[in-house]
Image (cartoon, rainbow, N blue to C red):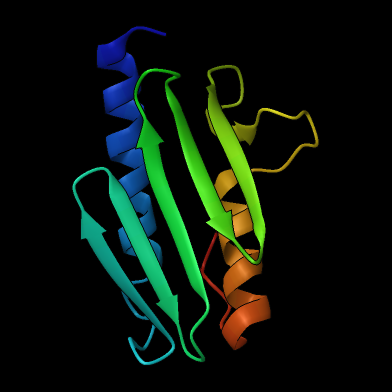
Length: 108
Protein backbone atom coordinates (compact mmCIF):
# COMPACT_ATOMS: atom_id res chain seq x y z
CA UNK A 1 0.00 0.00 0.00
CA UNK A 2 1.40 3.39 -0.90
CA UNK A 3 1.40 6.35 1.48
CA UNK A 4 -1.59 8.05 -0.15
CA UNK A 5 -3.73 4.92 0.19
CA UNK A 6 -2.62 4.48 3.82
CA UNK A 7 -3.54 8.08 4.61
CA UNK A 8 -6.97 7.60 3.05
CA UNK A 9 -7.69 4.43 5.05
CA UNK A 10 -6.30 5.91 8.28
CA UNK A 11 -8.45 9.04 7.86
CA UNK A 12 -11.53 6.86 7.33
CA UNK A 13 -10.65 4.90 10.49
CA UNK A 14 -10.33 8.14 12.48
CA UNK A 15 -13.72 9.34 11.23
CA UNK A 16 -15.35 6.02 12.08
CA UNK A 17 -13.81 6.09 15.56
CA UNK A 18 -15.12 9.60 16.22
CA UNK A 19 -18.55 8.59 14.90
CA UNK A 20 -18.67 5.53 17.20
CA UNK A 21 -18.25 7.77 20.24
CA UNK A 22 -20.59 10.53 19.07
CA UNK A 23 -23.40 9.52 21.45
CA UNK A 24 -21.22 8.19 24.28
CA UNK A 25 -21.29 10.24 27.48
CA UNK A 26 -17.86 11.90 27.81
CA UNK A 27 -17.96 11.03 31.51
CA UNK A 28 -17.80 7.37 30.42
CA UNK A 29 -15.35 7.71 27.53
CA UNK A 30 -13.74 10.99 26.51
CA UNK A 31 -11.92 11.17 23.16
CA UNK A 32 -8.91 13.44 22.72
CA UNK A 33 -7.74 13.50 19.10
CA UNK A 34 -4.38 15.18 18.56
CA UNK A 35 -2.63 14.80 15.21
CA UNK A 36 -1.91 11.13 14.60
CA UNK A 37 -3.07 10.06 18.08
CA UNK A 38 -6.50 9.52 19.59
CA UNK A 39 -6.60 9.04 23.35
CA UNK A 40 -9.75 7.62 24.94
CA UNK A 41 -9.95 8.24 28.67
CA UNK A 42 -12.43 5.90 30.34
CA UNK A 43 -14.28 6.53 33.58
CA UNK A 44 -12.14 5.17 36.39
CA UNK A 45 -8.84 6.18 34.84
CA UNK A 46 -8.30 3.51 32.19
CA UNK A 47 -6.90 4.74 28.89
CA UNK A 48 -6.95 3.50 25.30
CA UNK A 49 -4.53 5.02 22.78
CA UNK A 50 -4.70 4.65 19.00
CA UNK A 51 -2.02 6.12 16.78
CA UNK A 52 -0.77 5.89 13.23
CA UNK A 53 2.61 4.43 12.44
CA UNK A 54 3.35 5.86 9.01
CA UNK A 55 6.68 4.07 8.42
CA UNK A 56 5.00 0.66 8.82
CA UNK A 57 1.61 1.87 7.49
CA UNK A 58 -0.15 0.50 10.55
CA UNK A 59 -2.46 1.66 13.30
CA UNK A 60 -1.22 0.81 16.79
CA UNK A 61 -3.61 0.37 19.69
CA UNK A 62 -2.85 0.09 23.40
CA UNK A 63 -5.36 -0.57 26.13
CA UNK A 64 -6.21 -3.00 28.88
CA UNK A 65 -2.49 -3.73 29.40
CA UNK A 66 -2.19 -5.04 25.82
CA UNK A 67 -1.07 -3.67 22.50
CA UNK A 68 -1.95 -4.47 18.90
CA UNK A 69 -0.55 -3.52 15.49
CA UNK A 70 -3.22 -3.36 12.80
CA UNK A 71 -2.59 -3.48 9.06
CA UNK A 72 -5.24 -2.64 6.49
CA UNK A 73 -6.53 -5.73 4.69
CA UNK A 74 -7.77 -4.67 1.28
CA UNK A 75 -9.58 -7.98 0.63
CA UNK A 76 -11.87 -7.51 3.66
CA UNK A 77 -11.59 -3.69 3.87
CA UNK A 78 -10.76 -3.96 7.60
CA UNK A 79 -7.86 -3.19 9.92
CA UNK A 80 -6.62 -6.59 11.17
CA UNK A 81 -4.08 -7.45 13.86
CA UNK A 82 -0.75 -8.34 12.29
CA UNK A 83 -0.31 -11.35 14.63
CA UNK A 84 -2.93 -13.27 12.66
CA UNK A 85 -5.31 -13.76 15.61
CA UNK A 86 -8.22 -12.34 13.65
CA UNK A 87 -8.59 -9.27 15.88
CA UNK A 88 -10.26 -6.37 14.07
CA UNK A 89 -9.53 -2.82 15.18
CA UNK A 90 -13.03 -1.58 15.98
CA UNK A 91 -14.10 -4.85 17.61
CA UNK A 92 -11.10 -4.63 19.94
CA UNK A 93 -11.88 -1.00 20.80
CA UNK A 94 -15.53 -1.90 21.44
CA UNK A 95 -14.48 -4.77 23.72
CA UNK A 96 -12.08 -2.54 25.68
CA UNK A 97 -14.80 0.08 26.18
CA UNK A 98 -17.41 -2.52 27.14
CA UNK A 99 -15.01 -4.15 29.63
CA UNK A 100 -13.88 -0.78 30.97
CA UNK A 101 -17.13 1.12 31.46
CA UNK A 102 -19.95 -1.17 30.30
CA UNK A 103 -20.82 0.93 27.24
CA UNK A 104 -21.69 -0.83 23.98
CA UNK A 105 -20.42 0.90 20.86
CA UNK A 106 -22.70 0.74 17.77
CA UNK A 107 -20.52 -1.32 15.43
CA UNK A 108 -23.45 -1.99 13.14
